[in-house]
Length: 83
Length: 278
Ligand SMILES: Cc1ncc(C[n+]2csc(CCOP(=O)(O)OP(=O)(O)O)c2C)c(N)n1
Ligand code: SF4
Ligand code: SF4
Ligand code: SF4
Ligand SMILES: [Mg+2]
Image (tube, rainbow over all chains, first blue to last red; front, top):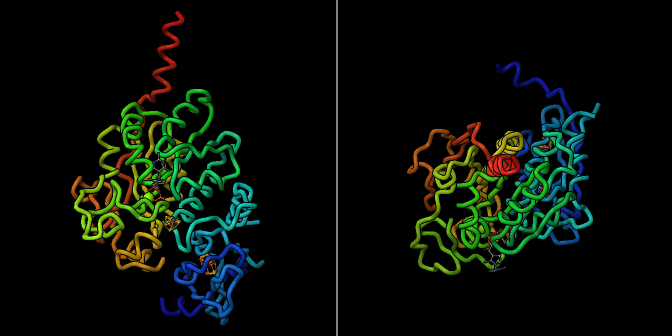
């Protein structure tokens, strides 16, 4: 088990946030299993803080699980698998 | 492209993207429910030309305006009667009613009860945020006893509707309840229900942080989501008492009824026409 845990995740993803649609609810940040999203410092044009990516490989990387897409109430996230 | 990427791309096509960002507040659960519905629909591979989305009035009722398929934004409480008419005129269409708790169970309550009793072939997605969101957070027929709203400043004395139990008592063939925390389960449930016939009811407990949450110690979207996350329990064979929702209490989720073979109203009607023509 512990050996498995230290293995870096295989699948990798690229997250794109449509900042115009984002309303800063931060569900995506909360429910990202690898915690690669954080609240950004800047504001979008509606005055919300959209999330931004903080990858720290090898373990803190987007694993293309798409959970943030499912939780986003604003259709503001697209995740693509990196091939 | 992998299936999830494909789905996200298809989802954009099913949205009226020119109208986005939508009107819903930050963290409003209606968007999560619509997201799950569109994904379930894409998975079903049903032709989008064979889908009609019908909503009543309310924040949830705005959903009809964001889907890029034939949709009806009807009058308050009348989503179900409009949907019944559509199904009668075009039995080949999949008719989905997507509306709020006030719309479906207060002003539209009688329509819900009788359409369920007659087993009209409709899928009803009922977004229950415990309040009339659009009009500023009044209490309604699904507000939990004791909850604070603009019209119950000392706590709600009423007992809320037990929606799954109500639907089951009327013979609805598919009855489920989830919260917006259950993003995959809502999607799977809608996917499953899209393949079934009859009056199918999926209650989605949803957050309205803006006018409900903030009066009930959950003023941020995440606080409401945490409440759903921590308090939901799956129990498909739940009793009446277990299905009742209490103020900030446990939320029993699951698929409470899933049966086949009950003739729909439309089938019975067709049969009558056939016999009358003989
Ligand atoms: C005939 C009529 N009566 C009252 C209203 C005012 N009204 C608009 S939305 C609404 C309640 C909506 O509540 P719900 O269905 O729970 O939707 P939500 O906004 O919570 O999603 C009411 C009473 C109306 N539009 N039409
Ligand atoms: S796809 Fe998964 S891992 Fe990647 S950002 Fe979204 S939630 Fe996190
Ligand atoms: S879930 Fe969507 S709307 Fe909410 S913060 Fe993330 S990107 Fe923005
Ligand atoms: S008022 Fe409530 S239900 Fe309406 S959009 Fe805002 S959060 Fe959603
Ligand atoms: Mg409501």
